[in-house]
Length: 108
Image 1 (cartoon, rainbow, N blue to C red):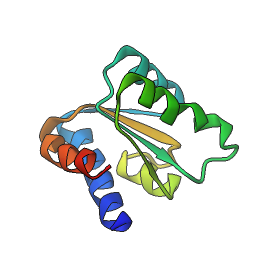
Image 2 (image 1 turned 90 degrees about the horizontal axis):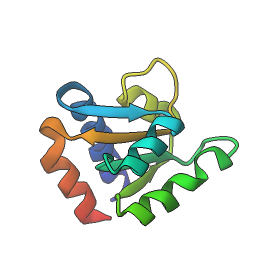
Image 3 (image 1 turned 30 degrees about the horizontal axis):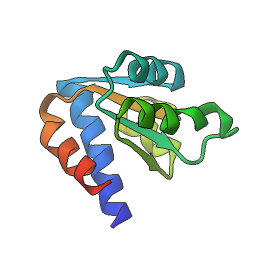
Image 4 (image 1 turned 120 degrees about the vertical axis):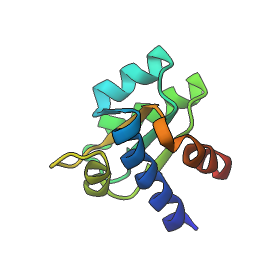
């Protein structure tokens, strides 16, 4: 179940990257949550030190933004179209991933 959800999350990031807009990196993601523009926040579990991204799920919850964790920052970076790993990604404009994001949120 979790793997299927992860696949959907990565797919939604890839779709939003090309048809909408995403923010990559903890600072960008934090700003997107604070501004209320984030539609979905994705945080990698394997970030070291964990303090770097620890505040994101709490902040997202405070602002009512769905937040999901994935196992790998490498996979997250790849989905975001980066050549490097990404500790966190926020989808700010869903583009064609809107329906997929709604499915993900309904499973949280």
